[in-house]
Length: 126
Image 1 (cartoon, rainbow, N blue to C red):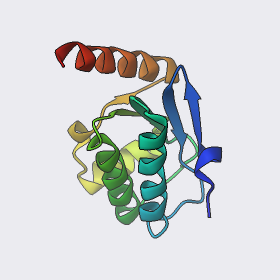
Image 2 (image 1 turned 60 degrees about the vertical axis):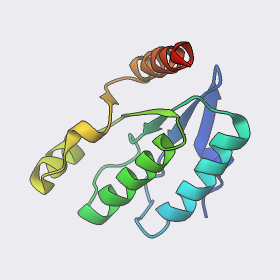
Image 3 (image 1 turned 90 degrees about the horizontal axis):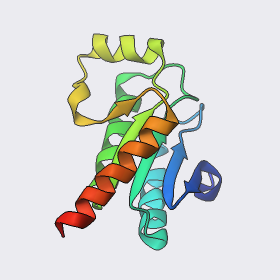
């Protein structure tokens, strides 16, 4: 199994979650459960899913990743992604995946700026 504390790094309180290269859709539900518990335990206001370790995905893996990202967001946490390579992007286009259900950025810096801005705006609206 994948130890959650080895897959997530906290930077200024925000999380960067690196998806392992050898992950499969069967293990993602357990990872998702542990990730959600970590987020609640550490009061993480925003999380970037770093997909740069993945070089390919199929429909089942992408669906499981989307479910994990949406589950995290349902905790009230700002979420985004980075590291989507050209091969995955073209596969997603072939699968007919809707890219509007997740925020994607080209760099971790842009991801962190997005998370900080969205969580700041969320706190200001409370």
